[in-house]
Amino acid sequence: MKTLLAVAAICFAACAAYADEKPVDLKKAPGRDTVEANCGTCHSLDYIRTNSPFPTAQVWGAEVTKMISVFGADIKPDDTKAIVEYLSKNYGS
Image 1 (tube, rainbow, N blue to C red):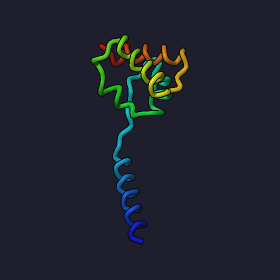
Image 2: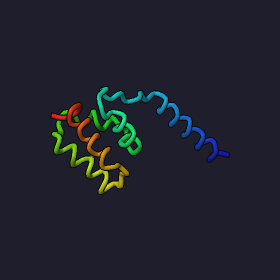
Image 3: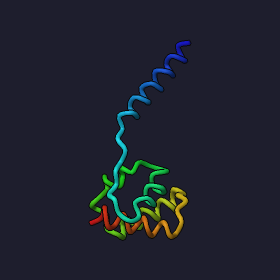
Image 4: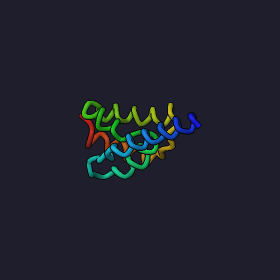
């Protein structure tokens, strides 16, 4: 019974923390939907705003390539181009 209460308390705390989280609102521009659909499936989109405006187009390209080759992100070549263009134009230096 104590274990059940502990699990319930943890779940309640996690739900309360999640409820306070605000959705990330990326800049409205061509490619935004592609970024949200591909990048947001694996990690928070906060990473984009946190890293910007430091990366250049080359750095954003390397990041997307890393997500595909190292972390196994299933991103199509056309989507890769759209993602890099969006990130470079809206969150790049």
